[in-house]
Image 1 (cartoon, rainbow, N blue to C red):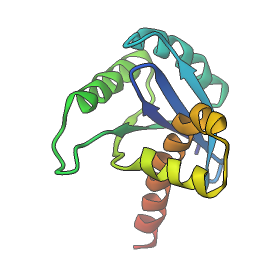
Image 2 (image 1 turned 180 degrees about the vertical axis):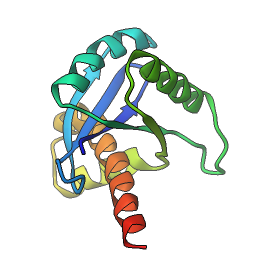
Image 3 (image 1 turned 45 degrees about the horizontal axis):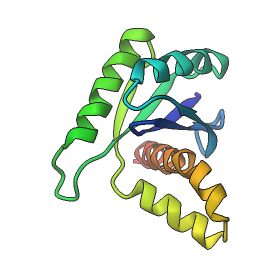
Image 4 (image 1 turned 120 degrees about the vertical axis):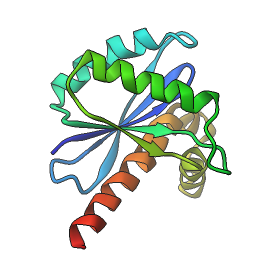
Length: 143
């Protein structure tokens, strides 16, 4: 099982990938595109899906703290539909509240330089999204 985690922004798509056992998420890369040009992001994403033999995608769904969905969540739901239209890989929407905050704190604790944090934040947020999904899968298997 190879799972891809995605953190979608208006100009970037942070990616993380699981190991083959589905236990650990690791940063992969950040796809950059012109503001709101999600077709460009999809064009760059498609060959990666084939190259890494991805069988599931976990896409962050940014909810407000009260659980409601805003404009960013609508963007993620649209992107999910576009991915599924492009390929036959299932896309799971995953609540990503505070994933970017957690990624930033982790990089600060690791004393990562500001310039490195800026280039890595999207990938690290994708790691948090994906790791949350993988951890829940393991918990469900134990039950």
